[in-house]
Image 1 (tube, rainbow, N blue to C red):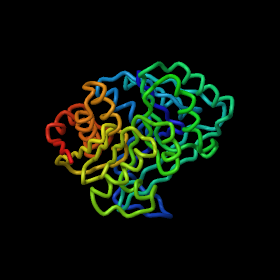
Image 2 (image 1 turned 180 degrees about the vertical axis):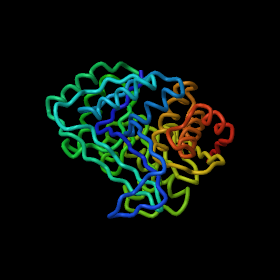
Image 3 (image 1 turned 120 degrees about the horizontal axis):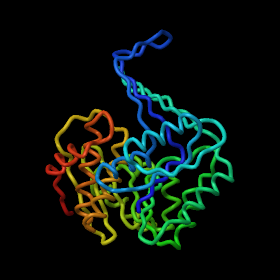
Image 4 (image 1 turned 60 degrees about the horizontal axis):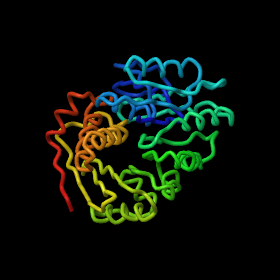
Length: 305
């Protein structure tokens, strides 16, 4: 089974208007409401690609109920822990002359509720896949991903981590099956400017030396790069299309990779489906549809370096 963990999910309220006039009443042209959070995005794409999975994490109050109900409507299984305080955050994403985001902070998570999460993780079995995605709420310690990976190491599960800077660097000692920084995050981790694909390969290999088994780097318009545990370097192109919304593209790439690898046991096919899924979401107003992924995958070419 595949499990995704979203510690601080959200309702994403996306509004479109021609011009944001601060200090005055604004009328929107269109609005959409989605269940948000990196792990939740991955769960949705996994289901779109035909994989049952379980989304877990923490939710609270009526906004938390919206997340659970939305996933149920999408036929995505969930097993969230309900908190007794606050409410699941609402993130407002304003698309106008410029893109503006206003993100909520989320509720407090007690030690008792955190223990409930660890109890759920005890149910994982060998060869299950666990996706740890996104930031850690300010109410929790920054070493939480490390503690989770230490907790599940005896279960022999494949752990995938999609997080930034120190959150990612600090888990490498637990040998995650896959990590997915983008090229800008890779620069931040090592405080360098990456001028070429060769530079990205070099620093991706450093992450392997630090413990990661497979390193998947999204490179925006330049495609994606995978350094496999067998030291192969694979690079995908980007299919034709217009970028509409980059939110969730990286999460979709992770889900596509998992699907491709699960179906074929091939890293090349994992990268191909990951690249198609990420692009399909970038070319959509919401997360990708199966039809668009199937269309774009025909355009994905994999180069070996």
